[in-house]
Amino acid sequence: MTDRDALLVAAVRAGNLREVHALLGPGRNADATDEDGLPVLCTAVAACEEDIADALLGAGADPDAVDADGAPVLCTAVAAFAHRTVAALVSAGADPDRDLPDGTTPLLRAVEGGSPATVTALLWSRDLQEPELRLAQPERERLLAAASHWYGTGAEAELRRRTGATGPAKASTVDDECCEVEQITLGGRTVRAGHGAVLTTLESVFAAPAPLTELVARAVRHPDPLHVDWAASRAELRARLDEGARELVTALHRHPSAAHRRFAVDCLASWQFGLNRAAYPHHEEDRDLLAAWAETETDPEALAEVLWALAESEEAHPRLEALGLRYADHPDPRVRRKATDCLWWHDRPLTAGATAALRALTQDPDDEVRFDAARILLGGEVGPPDELRAVVRDLVRDPHSPVRGAAAEALAESDDRTADATALLLAVLDSDDRIVRLIGAYGLALRDDPYTPQAYARVEELGRIYRPDHRANALEDWRRRNEPPAQAPV
Image 1 (tube, rainbow, N blue to C red):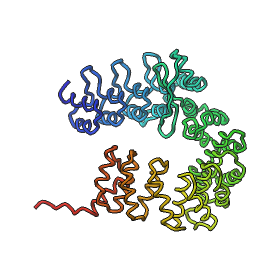
Image 2: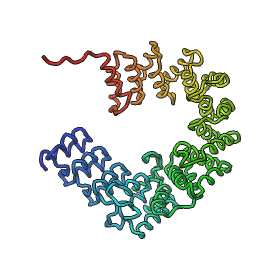
Image 3: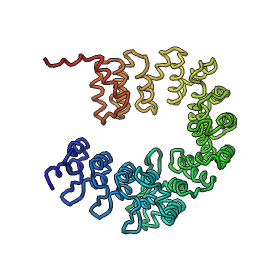
Image 4: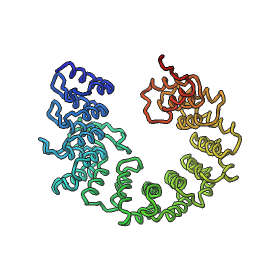
């Protein structure tokens, strides 16, 4: 191992991305190996250093490198659910369909692993044939059978069967790209319980679509709109509107299960936001359905979501304010939060009834309700501004408030230039949340406060400030306004 290779190995082990970039200049060896002959790419992937793996691949590292056990580095990334690295490896030339000694392929391992994001990263790449073309029918059937089996059995039950473990499983909820999924560890093996979404994806790709009712059943098995199975079913139903998906979904608003009704409103909302009139001519019908539904829904969570879908629509429904007034004093705070949003519309002045209701809601016991009511009234310049600003300031003062960050950002961007506002922006620099600190620094920069550079330094104590971000860029604007230009050398 050369001295240069040793420096790269050390930088990768330390997770020092800046040093890795510096060492990957012209003439450097991106395939450097350590004292045991392990390529640095394998070290980076095993440590889940995605940015470093990207840098090594960009510098020409071999995407087919193998670890100390002879396993391809792609399999290491699949086992770690590192979907970004999986995609980068496949784009660099790693084969997702290669036959492995145990009879599997990286793609089959990903299907059994239950991470939809990882499976998707292996199915498509700019240099691969479409999966429905490159995979022979027997392989497609094997993948579908594996996903179906894991889904039908359940991730934990299948892990117990395969490992023989009898003790308790370790379970947690983790991110899987834009969604969430349970991650289960048992008997030394870890999988994710996203096999419903994996199955839905494979069925769509391989032209073996499930019945529409089965897609609904998969969604509500995990009654959480953030769950990967729910999201995959919602996306597939949207793709199959011409097969009766809309009729099935709208009928669900009368379903006895609240989870089914919540899934229905989530689908309707996604179509409102994501489809134009040419692709989906039912927007007005759906808004009328939602307004009528809001009159009869008894489940607070479902009702809150119906109100949200109406309030977030591109067009205001004629009954929007009436519904907001009806539910402004609902006993469940989730409903009151959404009722607040129904009381105003962006291009209309607040009515006297809405203003009175919002003023009452600024005294609500729920932080989010108080904040939203005060924010709306301030935006409409209705009511005493000092009284409304006090609501926002009190939320910023409370380190335990769930809306502290939102309230701090509202304060930062407001025209409140009082000493109290400045003191609060300084105080949030003690927060353990990097974004809350950034908001405080941003607010100081907007006020040309002399402490601004130190405030941004306080933010970086908790981690790097990522750009582009208007809050991060405000420091440079502050410098241009407040620091003399550098003098050119004579």
